[in-house]
Length: 547
Image 1 (cartoon, one colour):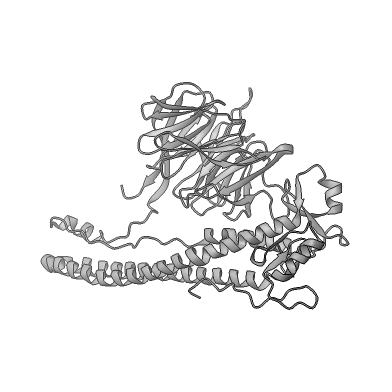
Image 2 (cartoon, rainbow, N blue to C red; image 1 turned 135 degrees about the vertical axis):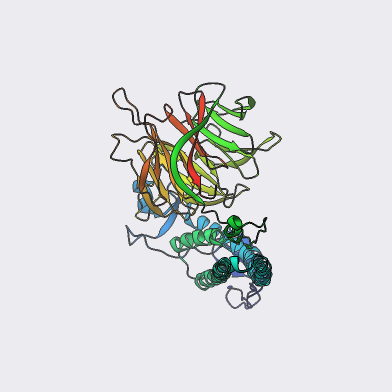
């Protein structure tokens, strides 16, 4: 299907007895189709009823039994717990919570689903198909470029005569492998995009086939699937063209000249011994979080009040007064260089542009925004939220501040977070959170499915997680700030992508005092700032194998 499906209705008759005229209107109160002729009569008899255009009608809430009270119907929605309830569940356990009639939520989500499906048809699917066409053209470009490289190699080989015959043979094999690898990768990308299009079409087909009988709980799950559908779009990578580099002829450099046939791969780094590169002195003691602003600036949160922008010499460039309830990552920098920060007193997320103008990006209602992270992968904004009685969640927003997703419970209905203090994202899309009230790191998938948690290593007697970040290899780095008069466990823990402990990257003897702030710069170096320190320490722990 190449176009948005036709949503026109067949001829719909009036529900009024003995009337068979076309129903242009609908009564939301009694859920009755009404023609123009019968509308006035209906309103005279039932003055309080709400009559709207048929296209704007509200669906009658389908009957669904309560799991706990099977004789009761689900008809109440708890805004605090984000759960549909029956009247008995509401009276017993949720009477002091904010609530609305489930019909309102049901119809709101139906409307959102329709809007998002239209967006998929009009934008997402055409974009995916465009990428398929681009891949096809790039594959042909790769095929045409490979013979040219072969010819260049052959000419150089003729100049070097017999001395380079063996090198030429080896490198032709290598080029064959690269060609196969690149084309295979592109074929996989093309297949992923085609599968993704089929997935979207199937998602819409399933939704439209179930619209007439869908239940609220099914609809809520369906809405999440639809909302997350665009997140699952496979990325379109840039074409990786091989290169052949000529250099001055000498026998020692022959192998190097031919070995320059390669692809620009990111997997060039490996863990190495830790080396302290430098220290930067800042204005005052106390650093709870760092956000780097390439190429030569950074933001730091200071105690519970100020956000300060520094240059690389530690000079203050800008200062913003805000409020921060806990030790947390209350600011982040977007790929466009904009600062985002939370203000828990005003339940607001603010955006500060490069010219230092400030505007409201998100108003979170009765939820208090605390930790925040801007994804370099897709620009989404992850915000740690807290409400009364210790409710905590992560809410995902798009770049414009539109809510996409809530992450609060695991698949068994248990809470995921006791607090959300620091947030980061891994290269596979996992969301990694330090929860110092629960003394652990919690990792979920991009869709919010629980993966694992980490509560420290047996080599240390205590674990109090603060700053957290990830690196180019997908490793997770987290500050352990546990310290008592008798025990010093302050350190930086290094985990792999699956939560396996790798090492104490910085031991208590190496680590700055009270480490809280943690981030990785563009050169893949680690920055560490402490609560009781006026310096930022920078470490090298990854080695580029090509250097």
